[in-house]
Structures are given as structure tokens and as C-alpha cells.
Image (cartoon, rainbow, N blue to C red; front, side, top):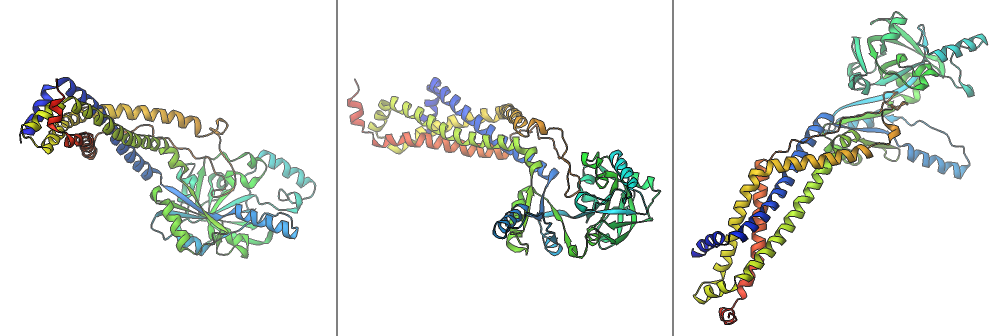
Length: 486
């Protein structure tokens, strides 16, 4: 084993060149370790974000396909373009509720109704219009241009009120009674807003009646099982349409809303939202639904919404992707640079090798000596990288994340969109633009797994950088080397 002793003595004797190798190898190891640590921290942050946020998938009519079909009929038959509501079959929505990927769901069916026996909360402009119309002998506040009728209260049919966006984000909260749950499906019960309850002196246990504005022979008696309060400001449209006033929203079971709409909507809903436990399973959920469910995907679609998750973890995912590229590039470039350095050193040591070969040393031992020398350098460099990795990885991670946060802040949304709510119909009747705080820090720490990967990558770089140059040793002829020396 003299070649191992020669390797150690050679590293010790060539201090300048050995320090140069150690410096280059240390830089490589530190960058690789920083990249691995940043990836690990980004994965942990992503896991925490997933646990915190989850994601949701909405089952609803594919209006784009329906519009294309309507336009096709319009061109072939000369029909006028008409909007048509396409309800979702309840049994199809219930199929997806049994999938393993979801942690919860909610069904939605919305409509409007006419208050009978109690007064809705009116806005100033609506009250003014009502007075004028009453003076002209018309039924107060119920006519619309074109002969259409509108309701003065909105009925939001749900399966669970605690899974409605307004209750989950704290905009609405229960004051008295209970919310709607699975046990209320099929029953005519309702939750009313506190202002509406106080103005009409209603309480839990009282009953109210609403009428279908398109068929006034269809009325429904609802028992008040709960009172909630809302901090929603509503939309500007609420000034003209009493039903859009947030105080006039009645939460009912989706079966009650469908029943008030008419027999055509029996066993149907407007849409269903499925809350996914882990956003990483979102695509699996959609694929399973397309493969196994009875849903007609020519009419309906599953709309995945992981916008909040992407907004929250987008910058750290970009940092993780960049750090992954760092690991690849530095590993490849490091192996090449170290290989060139070792090759240059071998060329300088041809005479030494010629003498050793002349006195009977074997070629594989000479190659082994070079391998042992680079391994000594690798061990020292790995030690230095391990000692300094936390500091460098933390600084590098913070710098990269700050750059990504600055970039994300400029590109996430147009300036005109920031700080504005978006009102409209749909699940929850009045949706708001949801925002979430972006993950703006990572706890970058070197783990045992990172050190294990670093040792593996470092030894691989050392082996590659020493192996290829050492192949030249196998072609050396001692007589030719020594005869060329002066």
C-alpha cells in the first residue's frame, strides 16, 4: 500500500497546488450543499402550505362548449343565441364525493324568491323605485324590463353552511341556532341574516314564506333554524336589485332551492365544489373522475382551482427549481474543472511516474495514487463545506427568495386589480377575490440527508475528475519518458 502513503506525502509536499484543489472543490461542495438545502427547505415550506390551504375542484357546466354548440345551431338553423342554464345531475356530483382525495365538499343551487309575510331589506335606490312603481299601480318592485320578474330575496342552497366561502373566511358567522348540515337535506329550513331577522322580529323556530317570482303559485314555507351576521358589503348591483343585498340572503338546503325553481330542477344542483386534501392529488382526482365517473364531460367540466396555493408557494418553487439547476450545473462543471486541474498536474509529473514505472511500480497503483490524492482533497473540502454550509445556504436562499418575491409582486396581478373585490353570481352568490400571504421566508438548514447527498455527489465528482486523467497513465512507457528528459 505504498501508493497510499505516496498520495498523502504528495498532497502534503505540493501545498500550493493542494490548496488550489481544496479551494475549488470546497466552492463546488458549498454550492451543491446550498442547492440541496434550499430544495429541502422549499419542499418543507410547500408541504406546510399544502396542509394549510388545500385546493378545490369545481364541477359545473362547461359554458364554453355549450356556447360553441349554441353557435353551431345558430349557424345551421338560423336560431338566435340564447343563454341556457344546464344543471348538474345530483347523482353525478355525489359520485365524486366518495373519492379518497377529498377532505370535504359542498353542493350549490341558487335562486331568488319573493318575500311573503315579511319585508326584505331595501336599498335607497330600490326603495325609491318601489315608491314610484307603487304610485303607478304596479306590484311593488317585482317587474323587470321585458316582462321578466325578479325576486327580492336570494336563496343560496348548500349542503353545508360551514363549508361556504363566506363562513370559512370569517365574512359571515353564526349568531344563533345551527347551520345547515347533511341532516337538513330534503327539509324546508333556512338561515337568515341578523338584520333581516331584527327588522321582521324573526327568531329561531319562526317560519317564513317565499314565492317563486316566475310562478307565484309555487310557494315554500321555511323554518328558521339559525341566524347569522355578515360583514359583506355586497356589490354595487345590490343598490338596484334588492335580492343582491347581503342582508336578504337566505341559506337553505340545496334541495329546497331546487324545489322552488321547479320540477325541471329536481335532483340537480348548479355546481359542486370538492376540497382536495393535498393539492398534489388534484390532477389524480380529475383523472379518476374522467376515467370512472358517469359525468358527461362534453357538457360539464372539472375546474381545478389551485390559484391560492400557486400564489402562496410560487416564489419558493421557483427558488427550488433554480437551486436544482445549480446542483446539476455545479456538479457537471466542477467535475470538468477538477478533471482539467488533475490532468495538468499529471502532465507535470510525468518524470516522477516514469521513474516509478522504471523501478517496477504497476500502472494501476499509479492511477490509484492519483485517485487517493483527490479523495484526500475531497474529504477536507467536504468537511469545510459541512461547517460553512448553513451560513452560505441561508444567505443564498434568502437572496434568491427575495428576488423571486420582488418579481412575483410585479407580475401577480395588474395594478388596477389590486384591492378590489369581484362581485357576481355563483357559489356563494357574491364572491370575493381571495388573497393569501405569499410564503416569504424559508428555514434553510443543512440536514443529514443533504450531507449524505453531498458526500455521494462529492465522491462521484472526485472519481470522475481523477479517473479520466489517470487513464493516460496506462499508456505511459518509462523508457520514452526518461529518454526525453534532459
